[in-house]
Image (cartoon, one colour):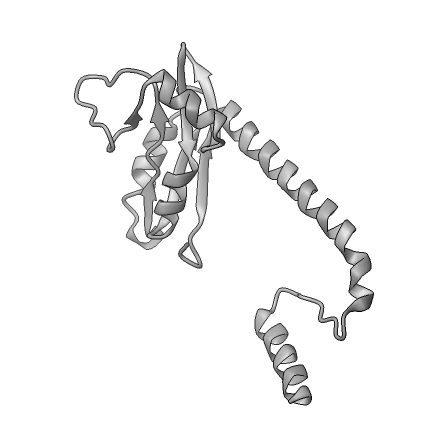
Length: 160
């Protein structure tokens, strides 16, 4: 993933102008951004191109993706599925900042997933923390990774 790539989520209720805002944001070269193409089970409208407007897939393919946890988020709307492929997101973040349009339900799913992931990481950290007393050195990681690297370098040089 591009080290400084960002996922920018544009969310709102249907008809509020999310797509128009996205179009304008894409005209700013300094944002170095691209629109993330999402996946849907609905049929293409006149003029829509697979891989450019959406990735159009069958309902069966989409459900297989759900079962295999291949979506960051997905919703069912008007008897069709819409979702954000994790694979597509990862590939896009390798190149540029990513602009993603989701409806309110999609945003809620992303937020819930993020909160669940944070809770899982905290639970793991809580289980692993007692083992810290067995380490020879403990270095607290802060926001300045350069300082952390320098401190580790100093410890290593002291050992060799």
